[in-house]
Image 1: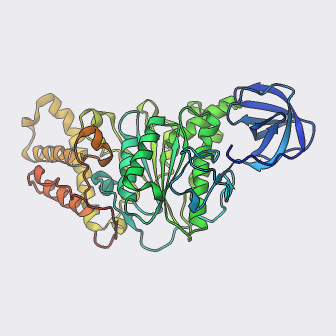
Image 2: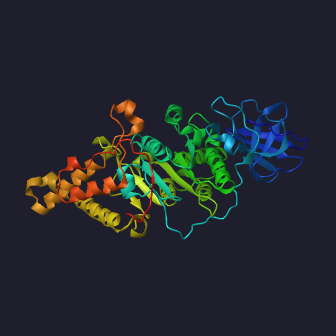
Length: 464
């Protein structure tokens, strides 16, 4: 841990049993607080976090899975909890869930806050006009409007492009934004975290970003703490400094997965799908921290892994219920070569209303969804009788739907070194105009001309 808590000579008891990350301590002295860190005699580098109490025993979590613990060792209180650094000094830095620097930079101890204690600031949604943020990604700006202070979930199975799409949004939205960005990496590959760090550094975005990582080589305890650690930093900037925060999570499902592994270690009884009921309460508690107040806003983009491509998975459903918009990535679309591989029918947003996006945008979205629904039903007919057997109206709708699928495909800036193609940025006006041209029967190739060197900008809803 970056900061060694002051060890108090207040004995709690002795270690009675060990199982995985779980450590049971028999209480013979002073009873500690929940989430308090306990020290082990003779090993000042090892800390146990109090999880819950069972009769005369304290059940703790071995945070770093230290292998030096033995039954009979004396455990004492520290009167400290896991804390992370907050404030301007953290900008441009990378930290672990325990607040340790991962970028070879100096340790920051000036201002630290415990990750287990929310700010307590009341969530607030003002009555003022909602503010749209332009991402430059056609399918997102059109189907899941990026609204300041709200949450977007990018849902998909393994290998369909969740991380790349998240990185592209970070690149587009934060490059010229006044907002501060916080990135939370939970249980993902170390390589991906390093690539994102280098990309943000090269584009100059890193100086306005704070990053927290608990990647797949970390223990479940550490991975389960990354979300609360990043939320603590976001709350400080929002409530103390009055900043607007862009909060990116990759991957929020891994947070639930880590809690599940931890629950198994602690011997808790699972419920539906193998998840402990306690886990969904923890998810809700974390999501509630990522809300807006009258002092500042937190706009969140969260990648969501789908186990076995099953959208009905209880964890995926629980996460989706916390989102204002859900962008679903499809394996079948990805296999056809379309990027981003968005399922246009399953993607939904409660923010796609005339009051937020305007009448023109709203009506176009309705027409596109109707055509895509018809396209989905016509595919089965065409597979049997062929396209030539369709009526002229059905054939026109089917062809327009195919053009729309291609239209929403887009080259990413963050993938230039892989694809060899320059990244594309589309304004919302370009997107709407391109869709109108397709629906009016104009040639599709004239609808996809990216506006080069266009910087992301905030877009008012009045003109839409």
